[in-house]
Every structure is written in structure tokens, then in C-alpha cells.
Length: 353
Ligand code: ADP
Ligand code: MG
Image 1: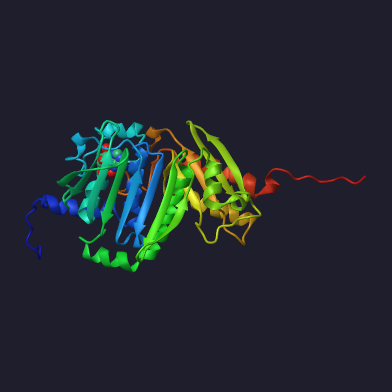
Image 2: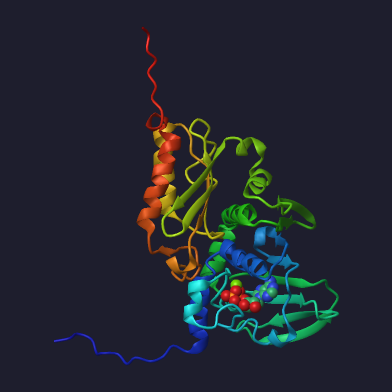
């Protein structure tokens, strides 16, 4: 005999659902800023500035020179599941943008205080927009600004007491993770100038990251990590069946310069930074065979047809399902073995007659 009464099933109220989901899309400072940077890239920006106040704890802001937002979109901009990027599920198969679910701005509204300043090329002046926690437009005001968009989030997680406490306790760690993530976008974005600044105290502004927006992966790596680090890298190009390709750089066998496991290891799928633990494990494992004293740097971009993977796996879009992961990994293994186990390629015996 059952010990408890069977409970009635009821719907959760809408705003609670929204709050629950918002906390999954935006996990921490890096994922919050990542969403804004991706929006700027999707808007075709060639210049993006991330400004932080007190490491992002007070506020953070992403300023771009992208296409701006049309006045007809002001009201719906921060509503949940409102997007200009995807209309139907099958659009995911040919996705060319970072965003697609229309969840970032609505989640940020729920988690902090959101304001947007924007202007498109067809407007003569800009507009400043203020939204409430449920993404409803509260105030609209004309301002002077150039074409593009600035999104500001104040007091992230102030609506989530537990996370708010964690956030202030871990702020320096979250900030470190954010800078590393911004490096990923700086490395992979060609022709985009990316700057990150942090202001502490009264007015102490420091530049954390600055790239010029040049055209190649090589130039970007040199700007982010320096020429001497780049000189320790070896280029990797690899074609795999089913029109998949891998390009990038890994440490040469004798000169790893990662300071710890996973340091400066960046993996991308069609230019999207992605967590790829299996690839990371493979690189580390093979590198260990050649050099057990250091860790390898690895920067690898996987070009894969959009219908051959699924990016709609986690709310933060950091994971991907591949339809053919096995063959990608085994081809990568073969290539890396050639770099890290030289005896595989040449073994010459000199004959003395
Ligand atoms: P998604 O990126 O999945 O569409 P978001 O909540 O991040 O969802 O953004 C909602 C919409 O707001 C986008 O589809 C886009 O049209 C617009 N938008 C957001 N940020 C910008 C920006 N920096 N520049 C231009 N449009 C933007
Ligand atoms: Mg987005």
C-alpha cells in the first residue's frame, strides 16, 4: 500500500518558469558576457568593447558597431524566445549565427538590470531602452550615439540570493574565466577588433585585452599570446571524410608552454568556441608521450557541415553532439601521432661498410 497521497499536477506559473530557465542560460559572469559578445558578432560588428566595473560585479557592458536594432523591435527585444535568427526547428540545420533561441536578453533581464542603447543606419539619433525583470520595455529615450548597440547589465544575480553571494565570493575566478573566454573569441574572430577593459575604484581603468582585428588565425594568436609563444606552435591541417576539416596550431613536441592542464587550449566548431573534453584529452595524452614535463597549447577549429552536429544540447550552448565524432577523433589522433611520435615517420639507419 502506498505511504503517500498521490499529488495533483499543476502548471508552474509563467514568471517562475522564466526565472528557472534564466538561471540555466546564464550560469556565471563568463556566460553572461559571452551571450552579449555573440550578439555583437551576429550583428556584424567589426569592433567590440567589453567594459567591466569591479571585474563585472557592479556592471558590465558590451559596446559594438554592428547593425543596431530597429525601432519596431524595441518592445519584443527582451521577451523570452523572441529572436531574429530562427523561426522554425529545421532552421537549426543550417544555423550560421551564434544565437538562435532568443533567451539571452530575456534571461539577463531576469537576473539583473538591463539597458540597451542602439541606433541603426536608418535612424538619425539613437535610443536608450530600459527593461524590467520580465523583459518588458519600461522607458525609451532619445540619445546621441553612433550606429551600433551597447548592452549594459547592472547587478547580475541580484535577483538570485544564493548565486549573488557565490558571485561576489568567486568574482576574481569568474573574471579570470571570462578573460580566457574572450581570448577564444579574439583568436577566432577575423577582422574584429576586440577590447576588454576593467575599471576599479574611483577611475582606475585597465586594458585587459586588445586585438587589432587582423585577418588571420596566425595574426590573432600572435596578438593574444605573443610571437615567442606562436613560434613554439606547429600548424595542423587535416581533412576528414564527409567534408569535415580541422585547422589550427598545437605545441611542438619539444616546446609546450601551457602552464597547467588545459591552459590555452581552445576548440571551435565552425568558429564557435566549444568545450571538447575528448579532444582535449587526446591532445594531452599524445603530447605526454613526446614531452612529459610540459603541457601543450592547442587551438583547433573544426569545420563541419551544420547538419552534421547539434548545438542545441545545453542551455549555454557550450557542448555539441557530432554525428561522426569517432572518425573525427581517430583522424586527429593519426595526425597528432605524426607530430608527437617522430619515430613513426622516419627511422634511418646509417650503414657503415
Ligand atoms: P538570440 O541571439 O538567440 O536571437 P538574444 O536574446 O541574445 O537572442 O537576442 C534577441 C535579439 O535581439 C536578437 O535576435 C537580435 O535580433 C537582437 N540583438 C541582440 N543584441 C544585439 C546587438 N548587439 N546588435 C543587434 N541586434 C541585437
Ligand atoms: Mg544571442
